[in-house]
Length: 110
Length: 114
Image (cartoon, one colour):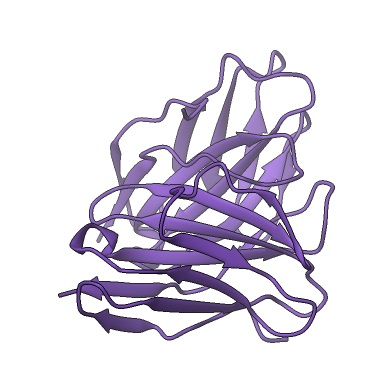
């Protein structure tokens, strides 16, 4: 079973920041938080991952709370091409038999 | 630097036939994972392989399904005697090895059983 809880859907205006929350209250000390997205029916695309520090790359930022029980993925300037299902996954970082939950369906609106 | 390559992209099989799905990992990647996505559902883990070894097949049905990742060549997911319920998108992912690293997914093979 997925170890994460995400809202089923969210809307965001084009050009605004999209903030996607994820709860992972049972995360253990050696588990990482990964974010992937799936645009239409394409293969999932890696976005970012982190352990306890906040992370940023060219696609997004990941904010992890101090107790690590929740995190937020931030797309700073959402575009229509960011419309996708976003998956938050908790995993030890090896083996990578990721458990994908239903994710959050983000709709970026013009 | 080519990504994870899966072929064919679309595969149609009649009930009872065999389906062979191929996955070539990214260059330098020695770990391969297979996932299945049924229509309107999330991805489900099937099997994790390293070269010539099956590491974790806990998500793979015990009958009709098998997977291999030979020393040379692509990883193969084989489904024997396909049934309509096998119709799905099958995704392959690869990673460089153990340790914290991201897995890269292919574009999938869409299997339709008629």
